[in-house]
Length: 386
Image (tube, rainbow, N blue to C red; front, side, top):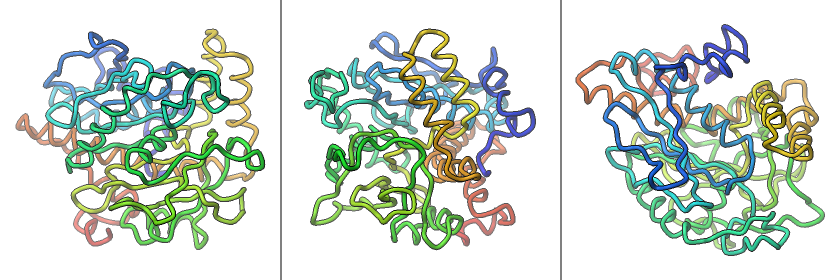
């Protein structure tokens, strides 16, 4: 796969759980949790800061840690460039919905933002702690307006990027007016397990997703990990502005296309190729089942989660595998809908920071485009292929 960690390939999947060189003492990766204003570290010219928007409202989950690992894995690929310039990548995880904390707008400090999934209704005003769709969440909605202003700033800044999953997808739909959350009917039930989406017609002509479509075949069906209560339904008069539909639900594996949107592009990078503000209503961060089961077991052993919570997610990870090649197909989905765009924008930020220090990186974001287009494509031909 294009975006599998080289250390995992060489030493096995367990290597990066305990021995990742990026997170070793004096390594090039750091994680900081932000639950109070005083938790925010000062800007550091030697730190390439990535803002993680934690939408989990304090609920136990696998997705948050998996997104942190995704940034760490990408940073690991850039060790040589980072060490050569004395830099490190630092993830700042902001407790958005529970603590009302958000990172600053794009600028010298932040240009890469990542948004997580989370429980409850997409509209924070509907989370009263009692209604079924609130899932026990009682929420102060005051974070939403500043979050929408942050999204405005990211969209307007061609050097900034935001990649989001699940709950963040729904919040971006509310921000943009692209879709409204609708509680899934009893006939549909909760959307959970290894399921299927289908690419839109416009995705087949998209300079990034057309390579995904070519790998999926004529029907454009992709495998996804889902765990959600809501469908996001577009308005009857179509999507607003430049928002582009990339994926839709299917009514069961092999079923017809449904009415719910599952992937949206809100902005593209300045080269017109890679999604820059993009989100999905599934969990592409849940890609390495070996690692996920290990993390899940650790959470149970530490008493962080209930046995019921553990069993439900263990079933998603191990019990819903309808095809022999499902792991490869899930990884392909993750490559195109999370790992590839994340690497592209993070590598660009690292390269520009290193070059601003008068050094040559040996790293360029175009390597992501080459990986997607195929190893046989040289640097000079990358623009032609895309």
